Each structure stands twice: as structure tokens, then as C-alpha cells.
Image (cartoon, rainbow, N blue to C red; front, side):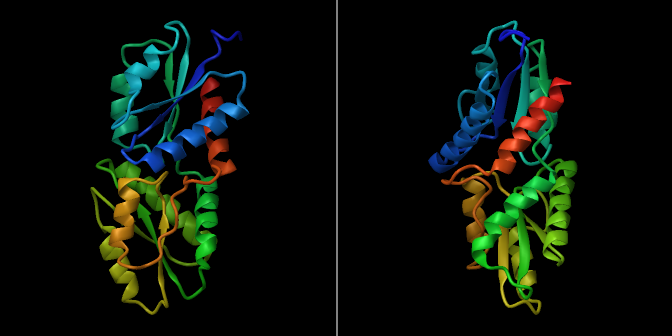
Length: 234
């Protein structure tokens, strides 16, 4: 393939008003681009930020195929509806699956929990954004089950929006048990509104950092983005 027929990788994030969140997501895409020097790699957003999907596609040559990799942890409304609608007017666009569920995301969650020194007596609640699409919520519950298998305990999933149990209630229920501490694992891609909400709803319980932050993006997340692109090539 030449440069024009090789599909571009257009990473599409949710978008955030948080400058820290924007920087964290941009660093992930920069790391992907560094790993794929012969591929055109761009970042766009489905909401909140610019460039949006249409502007991101318009910035690429009209005859270049594009593979969109959603930088979203589950396939909710944005993946199943928004991205399809916003790309309908352009030929040669393939939408890859969302980043999760994937066992490598559990690896990243465990790495974030490491500094909190989780013990066998601690309860762990997984904070997730929540979606109007129950299939996306089920994806998050699968990650919770996978995390529980790795930690050797039951994990409660607490949602920040759209469905129950909400995170505050999940933390309160965990506190009512026999655990010494309740620790919140943060199944959010980057800093922003939902992470701040998770900290508030944790009511003093330790909250792990989101998967992306101000440090180097986890190699596992870079790998997942590249794998989604390469799988879509076939």
C-alpha cells in the first residue's frame, strides 16, 4: 500500500473540558503515532472538543480510507449511533470496536491500584461512567468480574451516571461490610468531570488514578489501540 491507500488511524475520544484530560488523551495518541511511523494518525472527538468527527475526516484526503478507533472503554451510544451517523457521508470509513472489554485494561487497573496497597481485607469498588446502552454497562461489569478474578474477591461496580447502583451507594454498601477499607478503582480513561465526580462520591475512600494521567501512557493501552486498527485492516 502507498501512503494514500493505507488507511489513516483516526482516534476518536469522547472529549473533555479538562486540560489534564486533553493532555492525557493526546499523549496516548502521540504514543500510538510513534509506534506507527508509516501511518497517518490523527485525534478527533465525538463530543465537547474540536476537531469533531466531521472536521477530522475533512482534514484527511477525500480518497484516503480511514479506520476510526474509538478511545472509549465500552461500545455505548457514541460508538453504536453517533460515530455511524457522523461518518455516514464519507466512503471508506471503518469503525473499529471500542477499547474494552479487554484483559489488558485490567492490567492497567491493577497498576493504578498498586500505590494504594490493596490488602485482602479491603473492599474494592469499580467506578465506571455508565451508559444509556445496557450493553455498554454489561461490558463494564465484565471488566469488574475480570478484576475480581485477578484480585481474588467480589468487585462491586458503581456507576457515575445512567444506571444503578451509583458509585456513592456502592461505596456506602461496601463500608457496611466487614472490610477494613473501601478502595475505588477508576475505570475511566482520563482525568475530567467523571473522575472528579468519582472522588466526590467516594466520600473519603481512596480513589485510584484514571487509566491515563500525567505520566507515560500504559503500553497496554497503546497496544490495544494499535490492535484495534490492525484488526480492522483485515
